[in-house]
Image 1 (spheres, one colour):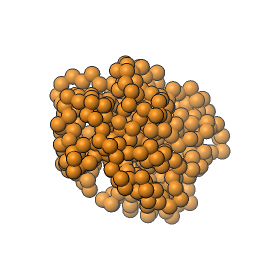
Image 2 (spheres, helix red, strand yellow):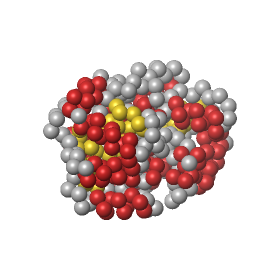
Image 3 (cartoon, helix red, strand yellow):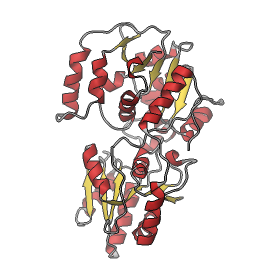
Image 4 (cartoon, rainbow, N blue to C red):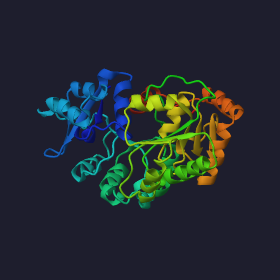
Length: 376
């Protein structure tokens, strides 16, 4: 059975993180590749048009040397001619976020068509204080479209609950299909007591608790603790406290902040890590700690992280409260070699989902209407 994948936003802005990564992995690992048809919205017709297979080939390839602009140029070669209109009787999957009102209206008018929607989270609407530079109000047409279509799947049980309790306010039978943890391609790591580096992935902003992490390490360094902190992530424009702390900590030899790194750079940083630090309280899922655990690296995380709900606490220090004090205590615990060795041994046994499983479950949900297996 053909399944059409709406990638309108992705071909317009082919980034490689977050939702865009999920779309690319879905295309890479679709169990019957020839049956997945990329498409994009045509506002003139208010219909979906098929895109050539070459578009998917470009999107599934490694990042080009010229980055986003080179990828846009490569895609443009395949986007010049409009493709055939997709019949409304064919299954259509939307797995991206957008703020296009005509496109949203198109979905609103497809209430009885076989339309499937992968839901990520509702953080911009439920926690607007975290997104002052991109208010959720601009995405209300997207929410209206989501409410209208008949089939929904969710990346976490937390998102499923928010959808049922806060968005549609009725029970929801849509499956939870967790994201893959093997996307960065890091080989299984082994514990080495000489490793003293803690790696934190994610933007520097309030909801990620980057300030609490930096304050914790400043205190540890001032107390003579031998450990280093590497932050990988861009700094949000309104993150004044985080900006000031990052400038202050630049004076410490044990601190490094890198705004952006390709996957190879992330793999290199994690290969040196004693543990990943991921204290964020504002996630719809939380994929970085899952990627670390997939490679056998322990993590320090917030206990409410959606990705780890109903999962065993193997290889993890879970913090009920995120403060500089709680982070400092967790880091000290991880610096104990016996404790670290135990957590590394646990992390090796931690069951984590793969992108191949993710794509297979999405495909089964759409084409076979098969139940999604329970999380291991």
